Length: 445
Image (cartoon, rainbow, N blue to C red; front, side):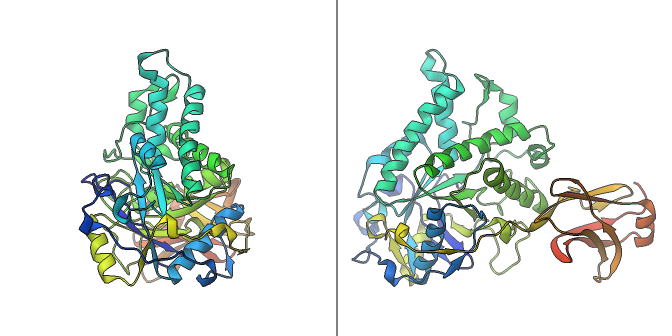
């Protein structure tokens, strides 16, 4: 989660409509002047004082027991009006420093949460493969060394009761491909997240030429998550932060709302269903540019989001927040052992649906609509509406692969509809799963 001026961000977490803060400070702020140190309430948080939800339901129905307990714990902290003090780690040397130091930062204590950027994994992997000019290491040799190093830090944080997060603001994968491979593997060490390439998101999703480059990067996240999963450590996962901004390729200047939604959804499905990482809480991080109280067109949907976050990009925001808020900062030494919580789960197979294509909002003769619908519906339909919300055409979805349904609006269909603006709803067993705002064109242009 990098801001344009290079400073770490503070953040607000919203787990299931409940606000929780997670401030993160820069290295310069890690040793503040005496007057900048925030006073913390005396005493440790008691689990018995937290109001946790009686029943929880997560994005991942197979999520580990510890992951469910962490989710419930975050709810309880919000009800008790606590803000988690955290530290963002974006470089390998920062991981080393925070892996061993204590009593530092603006609260002179361990942070309540450490958020590792996946960029650290990619950079360490590249460094190990290059091997300082000596005999280059293979990917598997380098990965083994990187995992051991990061696991050393993660184990230290876990022992000190520090919660752990993983943020993902990835490089531009077109540039990764152009740069070529190092020892037969892609080099993800460059920070090119701010470089915009037209049409990048469709190229990295399934069917695109950059999909193998993208999934290789997601594999790094999965490898890290599974490494912690084996130790019983849950992770708050922050993919694609500041998605409402214009300065990153997954932001509003780099991709459409529909493209971003599918990018986020595919990431969840790949980590959860393909790589079987079951210790992640999925956080949605729209950014400071997001408008409060306005429906977010980039929101991936409740089926894909456990937590919502609104970043605060400037250190002064934390000062004002602490001064004016009724919340209290919480560091690691005051945190409770959330693993002692008893949590009731209501897990079920995921039920959701969303449009895959078309990427453009123009519906022309022979335009093929494709959608992914989970949950084994009895019937899938694509229903077209005019601007007044009146249905003008309906097509039954035909299944052409697992969970993939399609329909085609013919020339006759579009002649019946006319040249109008409207929308198409994706319905599964009569329930609207997704909507697409479109323009209907009876003739080819």
